[in-house]
Image 1: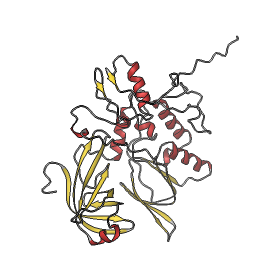
Image 2: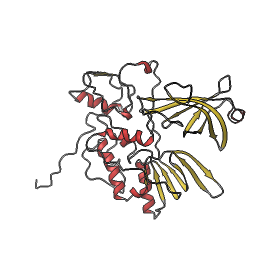
Image 3: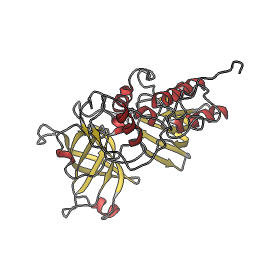
Image 4: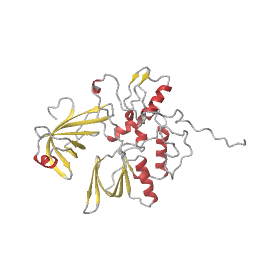
Length: 349
């Protein structure tokens, strides 16, 4: 890493794998922690390489970059005039980084740990990877947990659920911003085979939904199939033995069947706002809420009018210690949507 100064980075030889092709390349990489999304962003250049020119030309591609210090999925952009390809990635970098660069398990567990009192307890060290399973499931959100339950009901016990975080729950583990709740009625936003008569609200809050995912995980005996702290970097189909070969940050395994339940919105989306990097105040994404930072008396600008904005603004408006002002979204929501269920009265009328 000589010549890179005090910043995180790597300079030297690496192996790039793209579409089953393997290239020995020279790279120069750097990286930094981005507080707005709570992720580590790394980037750099791959020196000119004839094989890459033939394979990619001026297009873009995805691949896996491996250095002497680590391996990570990456994206390749079109080459510059010197035929050097730009390479970028998010989350675990392919080099040793400082304390500001958490690995997948630490990063996601940190987001989960901000949920506050009443949050489900997380499991300890990650379980070992199996060598081969009948079915591999990527993601332990509602999709992955539901797939695991159905497999057990069908009599399939040779399966593993690979989760990069330290707990089940998916989006309901990661999103802990004030007022976070579901905009689908709770009795519909649950498994048909696992109804919950204890929902406290018609549109339940994040901690209650997260606890529901934890409860069904325990009830249907999925703990023995869960492997936390494991991020899938690559999946290749091997036609000879008819198996999937999965590469993770903790090793490799094979599976006859692969189910992807990682979620289309598992990574926070960053707005391309000019000057954002120079903003002197606190910046964070709603999916990586900074609970250690007080908004009391602050002027807050909210970028976006999606589903996360409505409950957050509602909480701010109702909280006496909330921000002094914020830009309300243009979206519309019925004023009674998060109402609690009334206490049942089963006595004589």
